[in-house]
Length: 173
Image (cartoon, rainbow, N blue to C red; front, side, top):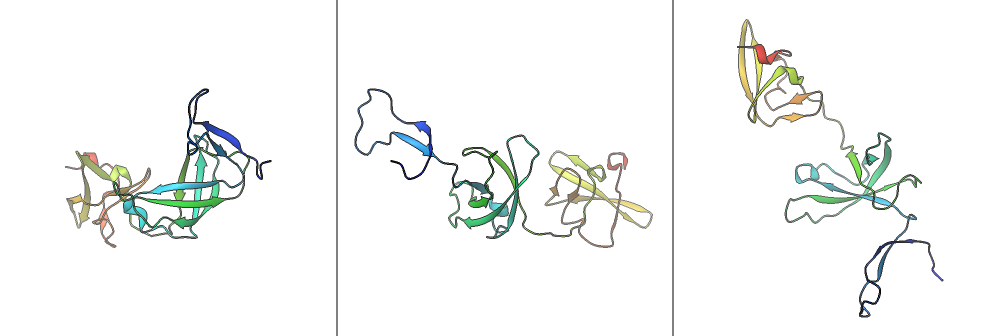
């Protein structure tokens, strides 16, 4: 009799196949202890700490779930420098083993100065913003651009007290 319940998630042999004692026959999965494994890319790896909260969704749904970072694999992937992060969440009957998740790890807040996308002009891979100095407008090429859907920031933008054109960068000559 089995000590725990599980279901067969993969059959690894065929009927009539010759097998050796060390040949795995099947893979078992259980919903008893589910967790999520997140791949954190190298540029963000140093920001992740044990105990941070995680918001995640499953598949294409908008429903959000909470988890917590409980372990960070200290060995980086040799190809891309990423880390695997192990997270626990409260048991939920909607989440099944093997499902893909989209997750955001809360690494804290950082106040930065940003501009809306309409304030920037993109030519190729380069971004330009327009700085206002007195009655003059000067183009500034931006480096290290960080963006989301609503805002963009760069090293040059974070200087306090500088005025920027915030709309219609396309029309500035």
